[in-house]
Length: 387
Ligand SMILES: [Fe+2]
Image (cartoon, rainbow, N blue to C red):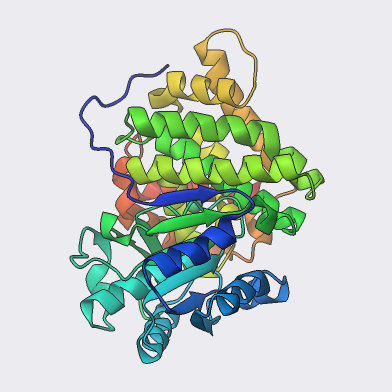
């Protein structure tokens, strides 16, 4: 196994409850806090999929008052965060419950930041460790398997005046607890299963190879990759397979734990930039770009990529071959999962230079194992666009 940093801090304050009784245990945790008034942060797709009702039914049964904030869009926007915080304060919410994929969870985290600091100025908190007050209790209920946001310390928000995505990163954003029922992910359509699953794989690969990787992030990342290798195709081709759904939800959790202890890197810098210039789905961008960035990083990551290939279940002779196999297998996965090329994700070719510029300024560029500049980013974007 590859060498890693020997000086590190391990901190993971989020309680994780995994299994079919997760929603019951969430209601128990709210009563224990106690929080008798909660704001549920979700989106219209979750409500249409019937995933809100099992939660509200349980809240009503236990006499917990709630309000629903469902204005969150994919790639959540700053004005949605401000409106959500205003709703939570007007309702007198004692806790936030985020139900959904990464967008409602990230929105709820950023809402908590505004509420804790009694402000509507979100830009003050962009970057690392600009948050200084603990957020109100946040309980997360993921309904997709990929984001890892249910346990991470970061929230990615689109600043609509800057037309760019910004990350707010601080351990103070960590949710109080994550309640994870694989059954809630069973109805995900194949395309969303693929996008989110490849997001989880990107978290694992980037956390494992990032400069800040440590023994804990390595453990989580390799286990996440192994679970993805076993379960992603099964979940994609047979969404009702409970074992595959549980495996993927666990991989998402472990991937999130991995990058909250380490970091993501250039694939995410690119995906977030493309999400800023086009609103393209995060996981799809990651899936398309992952093999290109892996190729670029290859000179710095031979041993680590061989570890990833091994975790994904690939056989090989020697580390060089294993590293190359890791790149090939990620490209094959994107193909097998029918992920569209960049040009079919609503991204305009003329927006690529802007995306390269934004990627260069992303705080996680520094974590990439190989130094990466604007021209490198643009080169990768052009290659991925043309494929
Ligand atoms: Fe991600």
